[in-house]
Image 1: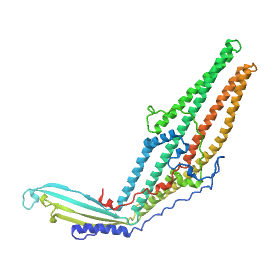
Image 2: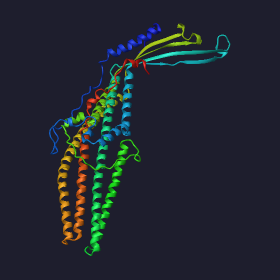
Image 3: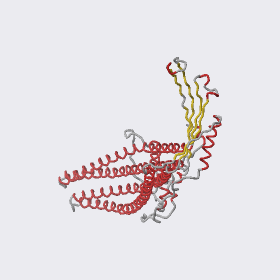
Image 4: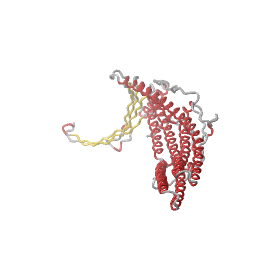
Length: 495
């Protein structure tokens, strides 16, 4: 359906604007498709696993935004700050967030009229046989037209698109929070692992020194005819084996140093992490309750926002079933004389409206609606699975800390027992009561237990980092509330 009416050109364009916005305002409440409600997800009232040292306290102990400060390590604090500033994976997520914002702004542009200018100039020669004068004619035509188009959002398809784009924007913001949390946790875990290797290297180096002194002792006894050549060979073998262990530990430590360099955005060739053995006990980490994860985990919030985006897409697809109203207009100047281009006689204009109603399209619209509903269902399932995974990860962290805490306590006793056994073996060997093999066995046992005690401390710290990450690292979904793009009148006069 198309109508036109003669009025002065400027007044006609103004009336078109007024009519367009009046229709939009009148139909603002008509939005097809389901309104969004966050899907229900079952969460237990409490975690099953609880470390033995846990006390019921609020999570105020976990620093907001800088959760790693709970470990009170200045070097870790500096590395985390460098990673947040220079890590390239985080930079990718930041740019993806800006892409999502731009996409939301593009979606809002559909609410406003589209104005375009199409100036043209044409030079044309007409043959003599086609002119009334019987002479060839040559003439120029200059046009300066403006075209105005507007589609009234009768049934909310554009508004649902904006709703979906804003939900995607918020999901991208949650993704940035999740990427930051992953990088922060990976950096802390690698840092503590490197420190654990520093401590383990210290233990092995001390064992090398002890075993070298043992070799010197056995060689002196062998020179005096007291010890056998077998004793010397066995001690030398043990010393060489321990030196090999130290070399392998240094190689592992170098790999973690290189990994940390990548995380802080620096070339591995330029980055140095000075050796410093662990001198830190894991802090107490209040866990809260499982339902907190719905608001504290950025990946859970991201999955929930993607549901909202898919829900809005159902409305977009449904709106295609209903009529669409297009308003259009044009105007400008047209003349054969450039000097007359802006004169009133050179003006032209047109106004019109078109109403389109889909009748038959082979089931395309219905299929699109079914597709968006299926995508919504998949997003709900993904959200619920993300919540289940989050709860599982917290349980893993809690149970891991409980077991490692108990193991660390018994392992310290094992180190003390091994130290006492080595002292006794040395005394008995010097007294001629046992062979040197007993001393070697005691040395190996002590080194094994010292390394295991060091490894347990490192595992406890890494597991603490994993638990903090599983709890969301102090992130809060309230940070998403201010994220969104709303239509603004200034868009009507911007590109």
